Image 1 (tube, one colour):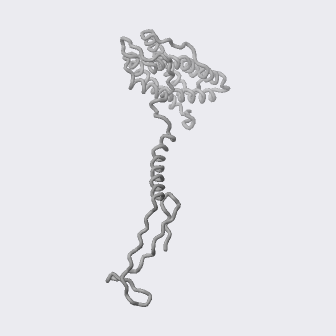
Image 2: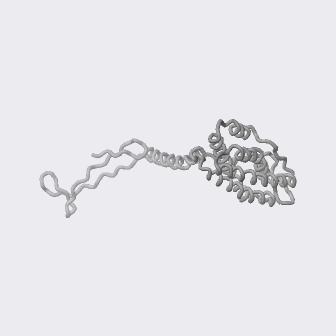
Image 3: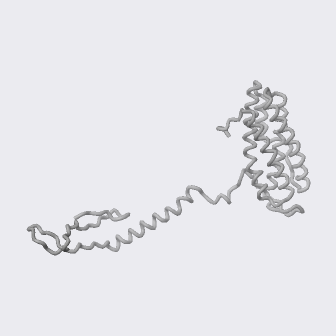
Length: 246
């Protein structure tokens, strides 16, 4: 007799050892005489064993369904995207199309970027030792001067209140630059702080340009996309960006 473990239950099901079968359909017995082969005994699982098998199979199927949910959480559509801050104002109608919370947050962020990136560009002109750093500073000044003007126009037209000074984190980055002990130290802080910030806002710009139904906001996003990409490029051209920290 051979014992075979039953699937999922840990119980064992017994079966007979197979006999050698001759071509005539008989098996040799111990005395050398041929005898008709005995049919194998059929072993059926008891009802409670069958129930255990069914329950075990269902448990495995259910686990396969639930594991992805537990790993990845709720649908990403329900979560905030690209650091958008919802001001609670919902979507409002304007002559330029619907204006969403994401649209408003984007316009504010464009203006907020200028409150610290313009001063950073001026610092690069003053303290930068490399031509590439001075060039990056020049691009920051030109780009954010234009974006400041555009964001203020959009803000007035759509009734969006805009910031006029950097937040605490951005002011801290400016303080790092101004307190740098040498030109080389300043350049490293300048290149890495600004490259990281532009990389983060780039995703939001792309999202707004792709999804906004407001023509003024789309126009701002189109121009911001080109300027942010230009700034990323000139900052990387300094050769100082540490990509492992981005």
